[in-house]
Length: 306
Ligand code: GLV
Image (cartoon, rainbow, N blue to C red; front, side, top):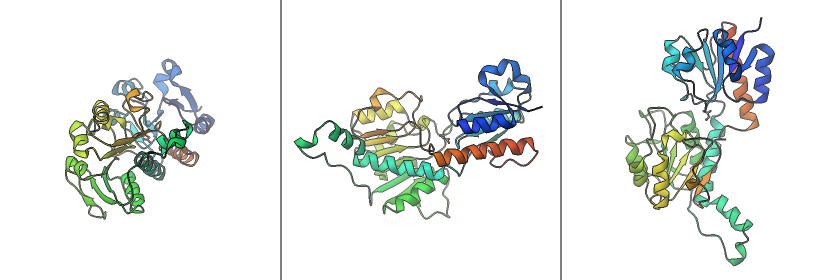
């Protein structure tokens, strides 16, 4: 008899098909009938897996996250219930770093506003407004994990001056460590947010950090909307207390505040940093391999340390 696996969030069709082939895959709507028999839950980086949800599935042994961020999963509750958690690190690093650089360039050079300028037939009346130079500028990176490092390597190609702040310095890295986020923000032309989401980073980019970034500074966020106090960001943009923002993530996705839209100096994308065909295939493969490993008694490929 096939094992019961519960799909708790939306997944790529090919992954859903591959899981259905091997397992008895159920949607959340079936939960009442199968709760006692579910051993594996598959979820994604944006979904929320609460302590109550974990406790409601007595046979649960594994939560496999389709995504690198697992801030939506109550990992402590999982550990207490003897439930392992896996995620998909590594395979999406390049894509996220690519989009981060794309947002940085698009925001500073106002590429989206420039396209609208042509489409609105304004070019005939004169050229587009001047924008801000990226090459050689100061890039402050908050969070120097795999993704932060991949962004820093790319930024070196633009001869950017790079510094970072994270929980602790990593002496194997060539970039300058600044031991205080506010000082990093003050120093930066561009402040790039690369920390994981969750309670430890909630609201870290607040009014004080934004005012330290200052009227010439731009904020880029490809991590989680929860890291930024969105009301403070809107206020800073309204008052021109910062120069602009490039955002792939928001506090209440898929809702994006109207106040962040239709601004020349704000570029927004719909949480799509890892959404390429190539990377979503690799993420799917890794989820499947973790689930298969668990059912065949093999070590998990990419467990979250609990
Ligand atoms: C996406 O946001 C992820 O965590 O992979």
